[in-house]
Length: 147
Ligand SMILES: Nc1ncnc2c1ncn2[C@@H]1O[C@H](COP(=O)(O)OP(=O)(O)OP(=O)(O)O)[C@@H](O)[C@H]1O
Ligand SMILES: [Mg+2]
Image 1 (cartoon, rainbow, N blue to C red):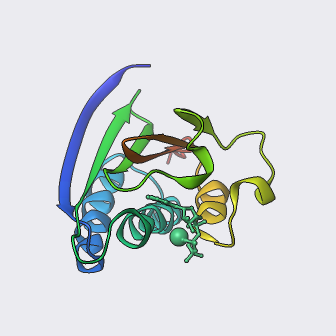
Image 2: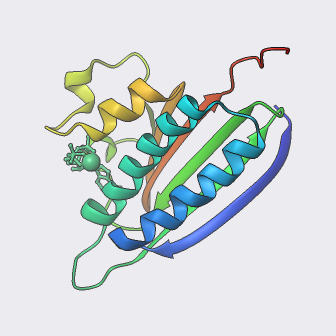
């Protein structure tokens, strides 16, 4: 797949910085001509991934950082990787790579709605856990209507 450009943001893993990530997402997705609805769906999914990094990755006395990279692929596909270098994702500690596809909601959930929402709102959700966690969210723009 062709990479048409990547924008990367690094912010403190604190709730008040998630807005900056949402604004950047909006800017990139609007430029790519995603619909308003598609952008809203991505905003919810990306916010959930960021909130997880804020809440679950780091010890609250020593917050770390969240790195979010937005990669435009083949002009119509946006891949958003939300990474932290905190404690590893507990469901995938025995593997370096895991995909949520093909797994039941029960298997991927430990009580929360975040992963469920990400999976419902995006085309692909992949979790990589090595030193920290990366959640890789992908959405493809529907074909533009020709006016
Ligand atoms: N970045 C992360 N680092 C470490 N663990 C994580 C991370 N993201 C998710 N998890 C683990 O996966 C679980 C499920 O995440 P999910 O977002 O589905 O639910 P939640 O955050 O517990 O609740 P909710 O999102 O509904 O507030 C979390 O409870 C946490 O244990
Ligand atoms: Mg969550």
